[in-house]
Length: 375
Image 1 (cartoon, rainbow, N blue to C red):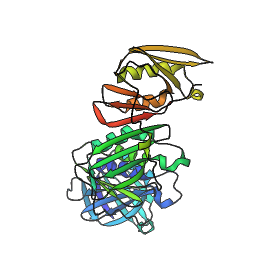
Image 2: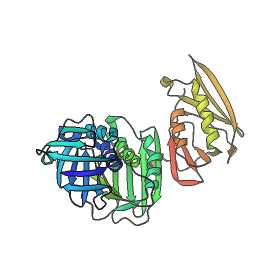
Image 3: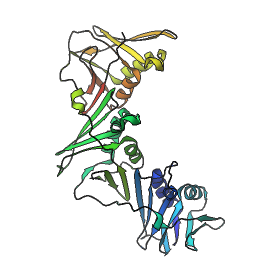
Image 4: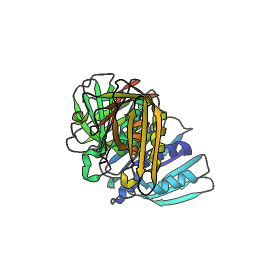
């Protein structure tokens, strides 16, 4: 294998696939990036058995890459990344000598690395399914931004560590919950899916994928299998395992009716919750109490060791009913941050019933926060 490549192009490709390299990997070969060079393209692959990322660079432009000899090798990810990033030259030469020795050089620099035979790399199937759904990158990013924060980090609740994608016809319903809150996003697909799907994708894997894609108008193809999911976007393939198990029926958590609906400016309400939470402590679950008195909303919190705080703001209600409920300020602020709207509605069902957050400006998003008993 021997080629010359534009530094910034190689660095971009390495940055993408490096997201799949884990520092905790017990299999040495998986700490490397697999380079496969043909006359048509240079393919880079990295995997940690949880996710696999593959990207390619077309070899049809000699100003970007000049192929001198085809071949394949595995190069240790950390070192190739550091070397390419720190070399000042616009072009870098990479050559395999004596089968497993890698020479990386420019006019004034030369690095010699030990490589690993590509035959030692696990066989990873990145094949596509017969049918797939499509989403714009901006839509997938919005789904992840509005739901991922609500997933559980408790490894004993593995099924709740992921985002549930439930596809029925042309509707995609995404749910995330940690048992104390729920985030739900519903999207209408451009095409009807040939088969219904109900899967759970590890939240951190989805977050990682959205970090390496841009906001172009090119669609992401989503291919779903029994135990994995493949995202195909531009010159990138991103494959993730799925979480086994049955996701809880979260529809049962959503109240069908409410006693009163409160309307308020989302930024103003967020700021009030934020200020009132200053005098809460972690052991108190950052608990704050909301009360209404006519069109006044009163937020309170107190701590025996720290002190107490009270703040008022004006709201509107659809019923002349006063409410009182306590909740985690952190969970409420996380839910509020997920809305890209100016106003939000708080559906109050009862003092110990779930609090529902919606916005008439975006009916695709629902947030639910469980109250906290304070007596």
